[in-house]
Length: 511
Picture 1: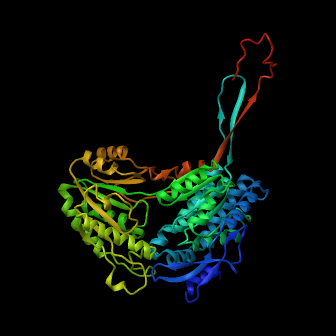
Picture 2: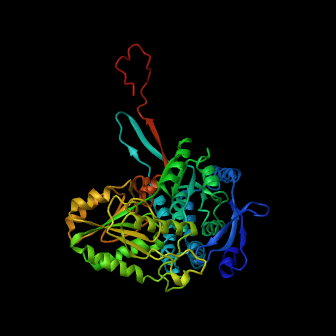
Picture 3: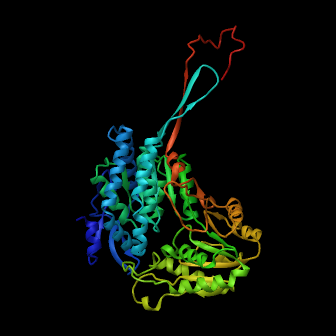
């Protein structure tokens, strides 16, 4: 049994974990450590190394050596794809352990964790399939030439991940990294590093060559900054807040690293009077409160047409009050804690802001009385009604179990309110009118749109935003192709003599 498994089984004594560099967990002895806290209890469950710039450099150099090695860089395509599929099998064989470790570390109910992480192994299988099917292009060009491209793996990928979906978000980039032949250094959130460290250990045991996958734990201001600006990085992938993305993206741009950034959001959900209101309310509760609302695509702004506005607010408030908040390891729990005391204070601060702005608190907005002494960071699902689009709670990302309801009259009103935001990650629309659904999907400013649904994800469907919600796409061929750089090759097939400086060659073609 691994030390990570022991951690779940016996939480009495926090364990210390080192960095994962060059194929092995490094000793933590004598290092500066930082605590890992279980958000459901507020207790320290582990300690991990607080990485410094020198650690990031060591991990980046290990990734570069692996990328250029015969063992990984010279591995045949089909052998690499077989290995990536084997990694998926190994992950699948350890899912129960990963479910428990992630629930312990980030506080999501075990039912949610199981539903999400169970699908992650298929990310590896999907990307391995893309790698197997990939073909270089032959390009028709003018003249006696044979032109084609070689798509080459971009190199070393920096992967900076958040706390809300630690394993899923890490793997949605680890999978194409490995399938493409790149190598990586992952910097997980300082709040939720445990499943990423365990995954690296499992993959090494399964035969992934040393240095291909490295994990450095630490704070964003030190380890994240050092990784983003490291000159050995060829691509930066980051999921986080818009300001974090701006800082990391600027640092990476100085070394001309390519970037994929999934950043903040304030998802609008348009609910038209012709929809099934009960169904829309069910999706509203799911979209707003799954993961304790700590998702970039959280259903944050419900725009509801006036004929069904009062009914929608009443029913959504009732659903929010009925959600069972508690111990994430209990199968009956429907919502766990937010990630930290600081995050809970942020949510409660927005409650005070909403009240001060004149919005009506329809549900939640408080710490559950029965959990007040638990030590955990619990807060009731919160619904504000009678909100106007210019209010702070309608514009700023809360990142907690918090949603607002805004009335509208016409389709044009709904689109205007939906698009009046600096963010553009996701949007949703609930309507029985097929034409209206497609009009809204076409005209709303978002990279992802759901019609009569919310938060539906598939490995084959691209994921990413517009405006301040980031650049690039994850999932799908769009993401996989971004792990390559194109080399153009042009072969002269004519055999004809050539002398540009021949005085008689006055009509020679320059290019």
